[in-house]
Length: 284
Ligand code: ATP
Image (cartoon, rainbow, N blue to C red; front, side, top):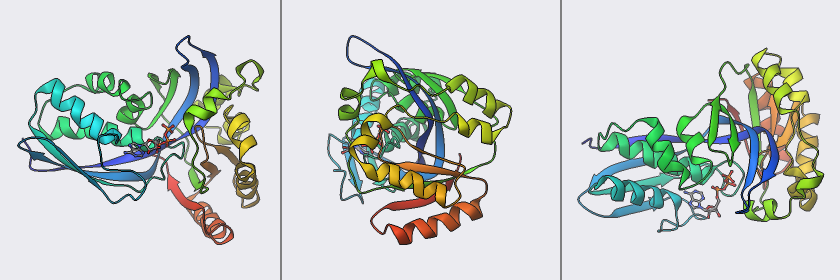
């Protein structure tokens, strides 16, 4: 057993998001290009004789049994008859943003406890446990870039993404993913051209890939919150090659060629919108 494990839990953005069907249980079938970005929570795990002790710096997310990091620890303890664990969660990813902030914490607890207790579990087993906690957890365990299908758990890794930088902006709006899916008119969507986008990325043609970018969930979230369209327009005006809402929102990201351009836009956007979380980030 190790004394301590420290994990970076990376956020994700959706470089494209399509909904291609709906199951009887209400879950939606997705086709989405998920991409981890260099914006992360930090989780510090230490062994305990018994129990789960969770603390956090967050004023928004409670350090209780409802926290998905707690639920992930509980699953590991029950499934592998482990003693206890102490977890400190330093929250840096905005909450309810469409960046899988909770899912990535759960993924870090699963992989972190695997390391802490030297269990030697393969990634496949951790992903299997992860999907019972949330559809985005398996991607957060696998990391980097992947096409996610099914409810988000069928993953095809994508390698060789071209160089790019993103500027992330999260307005002070809390969006419920459940609300967005419930209000989606799935018979009436403008589907993005995901296959063409993937081919363009594989060919290293960033401009072409960006021209195929789309997120069908904007039809609900951006309609309800005009701020999302406004941020997209501002990103483009500040030199972004493309801009899109991530997940169910309200995060909007812009794609830039190099860090210096993204950082310049970061400064400008921050001064225009002091209430908006704004951060430039690279891909992971
Ligand atoms: P996704 O992109 O997967 O839809 P999200 O980024 O929109 O996720 P989260 O930040 O994961 O949303 O938060 C969704 C809800 O989960 C929040 O209302 C929050 O209270 C709850 N939650 C529970 N545990 C956590 C956690 N560790 N971090 C963030 N939110 C958490």
